[in-house]
Length: 480
Image (cartoon, rainbow, N blue to C red; front, side, top):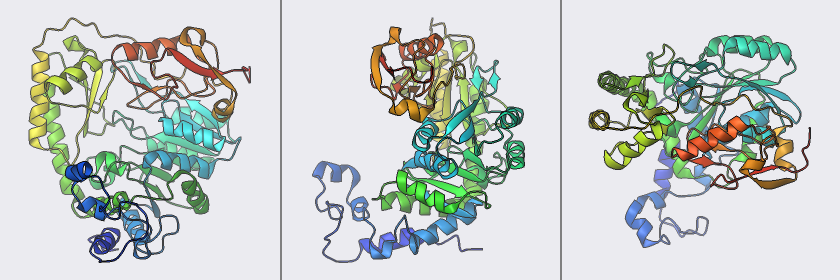
């Protein structure tokens, strides 16, 4: 057992900020001396004193032998991994590195179609061929959840040469599939199970939370420490266990997708967040679960509202169906945010999703409940859309994402793109699940869905034309 009270990287950074010396190294602001006054007024001066580079006492992220190595070892123990890497480019670079470390050009990888756009980037970078599995659809909540063990087994039976399986656990809505069963099936084929656990970094610290991916049998998992714990935005971790993944390939892959000038402020925040959870995680998560229970109970009593309730749900994630009030999720988000001082994480056609974490207070919960109470008293005549949500899966992949991404392309008016091969990633954000990706055949249903999301106030990202009047398509219809 290591001493989880220690914060080796944080301590080294703190010590360096107190050393008097003449700095002739990057960054150019020289510990805040060259920072503009408006920025200093906003953030203070201490943060810039700690904005340092790979100095002798601060170790090197790509070849750690000192305080970074020690901090990562402490994190591995705290999160149940055999080895942990700190990430400064978010979970995005971790997912990309996971695919690069397990798949070579032309290799097949099995993954759900409702993956985050970072997985599509990983496919483009690696040249891997996706074997998409449609997620389980819940018609009652109108939400797509996880892929099932049966669907993974069917995909592996059809494609036994696949090099890896990637699973999203939990989904953006907090739903967790049967990861243990999927791990058992995957390992029968002697390939690794990769997990996008971006929203599950807290699972290891309370028995009432879902089973952590590593404990369920995952070989590699990527967690956004900043999303649900106390690290700064963009600070994440990649964990592995066992011997099915080549550590050297992970290292090489991370060198491709991470900055060579990592932020030590982000790295130190990972060290501090690990210590906080190792020492106080259960108490902090108990309080977080208590706040979530209060919110769920009180919101459920408001007429016209219903909550997503499943046995395999992360209880710190609240998803509220507002269609009973006559609102779309987008309209309700606007009112809550602009008029009632409550800002959700995610809006969709019928739902709003809220993340409750160790940083929330009882006052936050009171404001959330009051916001919904006020929303319930408003007379609204909108008729939210009904029917099956397009969490995709109907789009035929005709060429690999990499081939389509690098193919000669052209930009056409939206009306002329149906049945053409998409050459860009197009997705509502959040949650960042692509509706169209490079290599897929553009369908009328996908176009209609994107237009409806945009009309209701949703944000469409990834496309060259943010107005969504045009789309980039493969020019020479390769593969058809």
